[in-house]
Length: 309
Ligand code: BDR
Ligand code: CA
Image 1 (cartoon, rainbow, N blue to C red):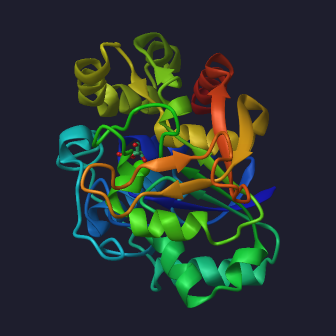
Image 2: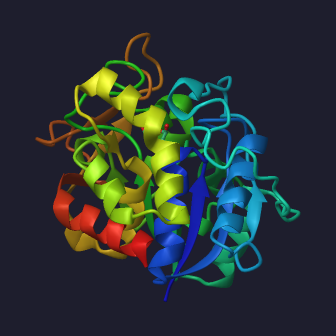
């Protein structure tokens, strides 16, 4: 089984990504590190523990708290998208019994990667603060990571926070920039270009049936879908974070190309924009494998079948 660490700011779609990862049975999930993002660090951690309890795997997968704020900027929550609680109101009455284990997310990433050199895949579905802190503390880590797959950015598509920036990049562009230039042997950007094609609609939700997971997904995505409709005119919601997990499960779901990518950090209008040098105008070495297209039907089929199981 592929050894993975998930890094999350749980979040409606982070929760669905965790479900896909756990239920796939394809991963040895070494741990889940949490970070400030959609909601506060504490809320993201509580939500992560809640989802693991819901899946009854809380004793098998440790949760480790990471950074409570971006590297240099103030926090920027997304309550309008994910609800006050971060899960769109689902499982709101469930009291969490487990807690994060002692430790700090970036240290956990360092410790696990060094313990399993060349074997660990990092699936990042949140602002990249934890990984940036880990690199700053232990630069040697970079060459020991098998691959990094992150949900973030948009190379041709528009942003979802500002006209040009995707949320995870916008919240901590300094961290994203550091990660992009760190020199990972494989760094895959799963951006809005492809996640906006991975749309979960009512048909998919009905296919999940009247089961605890089916009811959870329906409730948690209800307001999220309304909001997606307001912005995009489609009755569905984008499975941003689950698609990053999907790419880790089956890379053939996406079409990719390697380019030089940088992240804007010093612009009044464009901070957090992922700038992709398609024509190699800057003459720099490619550093990021960019997802350009996705077989959305195959991914949604995988998502639904895995959650049904
Ligand atoms: C990303 O931002 C967050 O709101 C989601 O959880 C996802 O990781 C989408 O832009
Ligand atoms: Ca997320």
